[in-house]
Amino acid sequence: MSALSDNLVTFAILAYLVAMIGHAVEYALGNARTRIAAAAPVRELVGAGGGTLPPPPAPVPPSAAADRSARRACLAGLIGVGATAVAAVLHLAALVTRGLAADRMPWGNMYEFVLTVTFIGVAAWLVVLRKRPSLRKLGLFLTLVMVLLVATAELVLYVPIVPLVPALNSYWFVIHVSTIVFASGIFLLGVVPAVGFLMRNGYEQGKRSFPYTLAKRLPGAVGLERLTFALHAFAFPIFTFAVIAGAIWAEAAWGRPWGWDPKETWAFISWVVYAGYLHARATPSVKRNVATWLAVLGFLTMLMNLFGVNIFFTGLHSYGGLD
Image 1 (cartoon, rainbow, N blue to C red):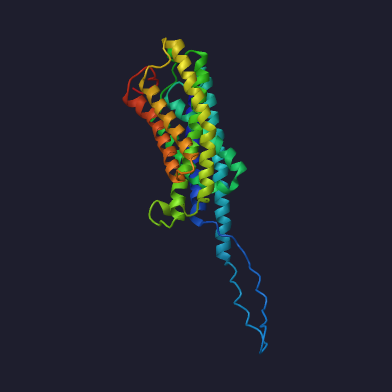
Image 2 (image 1 turned 180 degrees about the vertical axis):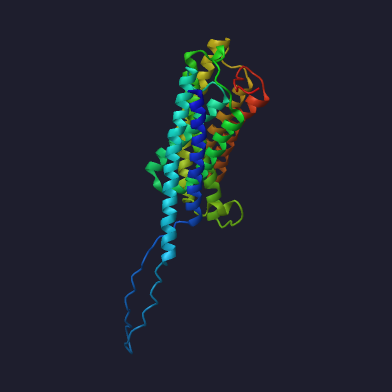
């Protein structure tokens, strides 16, 4: 089962790569549509002299090449979505087989945690995409994130299956870690439209330098900003519950609910930043791009909590599994 899980992760990375290429092709070809405009009617002069105005020149219908380009873009986008769905299935199968091989939930180290968070993110993306197909071009950036994170997990963070450390052998392991994982996955998805909004908003304001030009084919800035807020508003209460559950577990395991352990400290920092984002978003006087930068900052603190704390700090939460 362990070897099968490893192979499934490799196949999932390849499927995410195919999805990214498909979305990149669609993004490059654009979203031109074939439209044949009807000729404008002849207008008559009213008044002395009579007569008629010459008809305006008929609009030139799109060329066959433009029509083929539009169809190829649509096909590439659909391939990107299909490959993302296949990758998600492989991703889930890898987690299930890993859990069966370990005889526990697959959240015991950094490798397993990153795999689970990324799966939650891509599963949530497929749900969002089903409800709002117009966001499909955002898939390029989502699949890029998936390729980078899942490949990093496989190539850098991988560790063989080992039993849980004694401190994790508790029913609170499922309660606390499952909610942290779920909230982190939604925050991961939420940062994609957040960055997209910052680029698209700049592009709509006339900025034509890098990276704003990357957003010229993204959906409108307003829609991206609303999606960013909806995802964060959904994830924040779950994250709050996860932090509270962690404090209760710490009281049961170590005799104190809070000890400013490095991971506890960074979880608190993340909570404060995300709370600040939601407060700023609800304040009319705060510009949307300013509030969105707080959402991006919040995700950077989550990355610090996941990678930085486990790699560079030592504490009661040092369960990364890396040597």
